[in-house]
Every structure is written in C-alpha cells, then in structure tokens.
Image (cartoon, rainbow, N blue to C red; front, side):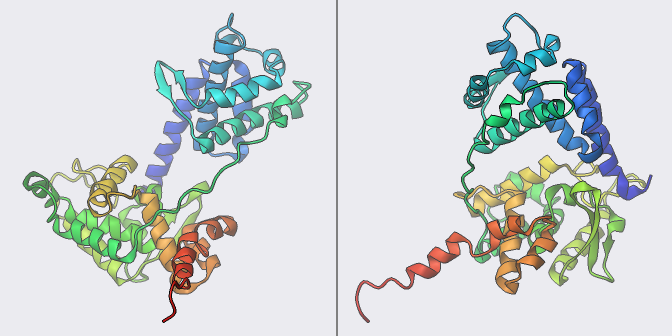
Length: 348
C-alpha cells in the first residue's frame, strides 16, 4: 500500500465495517439493496444510505407496523406502505427520536432521506420484487437557496494575522497557540489559497507536495487524483510548517501525514473544523465560518479575479459547472452592493 493511500483506504475500511455492523440489525432486503448499488457508489454514500434506511424503518415500526420490530419487516410490508405515510414521514423528520436521541432535519436533510427511500423502492421495483412504487409520487421538498457566507478580503487578512500572532487570545490560549500557530497558519493559508476540501487537506502526505512545480496532489471525490497549484504565499506557509514538523519530538518515522495533531498523528476533519471555528469566531462572530466557507471564499475571489467560471469549477473539483455558477457567478450580494450605488435620493 502506498503511503498516500493510507488515509483513504482506512476511511473506506471504516465505512465498510460500519455498514456491515448495521446491516446485521436490519432486514435482509437492506443487504440486497446495498450490494446491488455497490458498483456505482462509494462506501461513504452507502453508509449514509444505511443510516437513512434505518430511520425510515424505525418510523414504520413506530407508526405503521407497530406489532413488528425492524428485523421483521418484509418487502410485502414495504410495498403496502400507503402514500399518506410518506407524507407523514417527511413531517416526522422535523423532530424524531432514534436510539434514545432526539434529531431534527432541515429541508435538505429531509430531501436526502426521501431520495434514499425512493432509491430503495426503485431498486426493488425495477427488479420486479415489488409491484408498486408509491413513493415515486412524492416530490422531493423544494430547497431554498442557502445564504452564501464567505470572508471579505479584510476579514481574510485579520484571520491570518490572528493565526500568526494569537494576540486576541487569553494568556492560557496564547501558551497553547505557540505550539500550533505555524501549523494553523499553513492550514488556513492552504484553504484560502487553493480551495481545497477539508477531507482532501486531512489526506495530504509529505510526498504529495512538490515545491519545484508549486503543486500538490489530492484525492478528490470518487478517488480521482488531481494536481492543484499554489502561489508563493501558500508555498512559504507550507515550507515553514514542514520545517517545524521536522523538529517535532517522538514523531514516528512512518508517519507521512502532512498535518499533525498535538499527539503527532494525522489531524482529523473534526479538529480542523474546530481550528477554523476558533479563529473565525473572534474575527467574524456573526458569520458561521467553516472550512467549506473558506473554500467558498477562495472560489469567490478566484472568480472575481478571472471571471472564468469554468476555471473556478476546475479548481474546486465540481463535476457540474452549474454547481459553481449557483454559488459564485454574479452572487446576489455583489449585485445588491452594485445596485444600491445607483439609487440616488437627491441630485448631486
């Protein structure tokens, strides 16, 4: 196994292990469905399908087939679910309980969960194992455009300056910050300078960085390897971190992860989320800034500079340029800013 494959291989193994564990407590038809879609879906996608199917089955035994447990549900039970129950299921998802824990779904989560149920029904309908596909009559919930949140140029400067200095932290936080600031600056600079995804950044290894070409290789969604490029500012931040990394004590020789936790292990997606949140809430307390919002900031700035939506789509790894257009081209915020300047209350 190549060092660059470790993170992604382990992530895949973790997903498959969790899928197999969950399938043991679900009807056999769930296993048939998951195996049937294996060739054209990723382990992470299938894991999410299993989660969603389990929630649907839980609804059925609580509200439709109250004399059964989930493992006893059959394809005949699935086929006999009436149209009204799918509508009730969407309402149920607003606030439900599973495994003793209350959960809520927004419109996007509801849409995804209904899409999973539709895929489940379609699979068995197409195989001729159920005669009706009632859920196909239910339209997916209408999704409202999400507010586009990103950092403005002055906020980017403040964010990086804070990561570099730590001057707005408490004395206790500053002591901790001294051991992480070079790493943190490199992470934030990489997000803002390349638009890399959080999972892509976590998966980077030392050998993925090529300073001669000013480029690095990432594994994108679907497992494709892609070469991305960076500028001098990103390059300098990475060089500073790699130099600091080489001085770390008790670092295993076989640890090739580029970014490390304080335990000298590959940094996690969650740790980076908390890292970004820590700095952003000081700089922009009214904006909920996440690694994805830093990616959006890069995409916005690249589009403003190049006016080339296809270039932005390529950098961000979007398979459909319409996704890019929706979020970056002629954003409503920019339009409003320009439009308001044309409104005059008095003549000059």
